[in-house]
Image 1 (cartoon, helix red, strand yellow):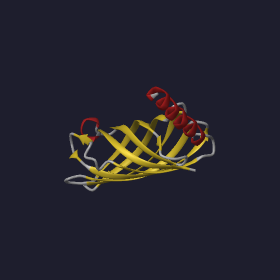
Image 2 (cartoon, rainbow, N blue to C red):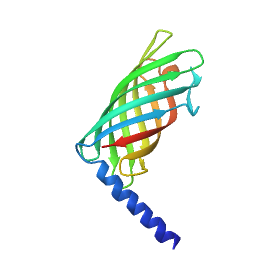
Image 3 (cartoon, rainbow, N blue to C red):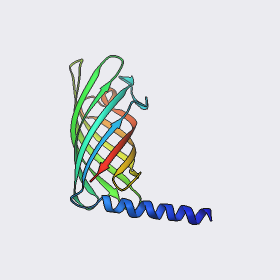
Image 4 (cartoon, helix red, strand yellow):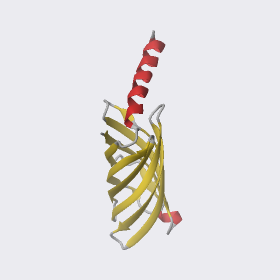
Amino acid sequence: MKKLMLSLLLLTATVGANAQFEKNTTYVSASTTSLGLSYSSNEKLNLGLELNGGYFVEDAWMLYGGVGYDHTRYTDHFRMGVGGRYYFTQNGVYMGVGLQYEHATKSINNVQLCPEVGYAFFINHFITIEPAVYYHISLNDFSDGSKVGLKVGLGFYF
């Protein structure tokens, strides 16, 4: 009985998830890294907020843009960037890559390549909770400017 209920639950989630990754769907999200789960050798732990907006140009393919803010012990970081995601429509897992510009208050300017892997867990037909693992690879200073972390977001598909 437990296996049957679990199978029905996963089937329902999959059917609902497929409809939201279609062409012409709009996406808006807010994510936080304030869980203290981001680390780089230069900054130690940080907290931050990220806002993204996107548009599905084809089924399962989204282009997005975003802005973000991070506060660390010594500096504040402001960033903006663009990217793309591919959603595996069978289960809500997505893979993405972006390019962003980051400016820190200590006159640090950084260009980063940003791959990420996440999961869109649908609460209802439009709202998702989206945990993701990311790696911001600095193209200017790889050892001190790169960052790996975990973020949790709230997404809206309409």
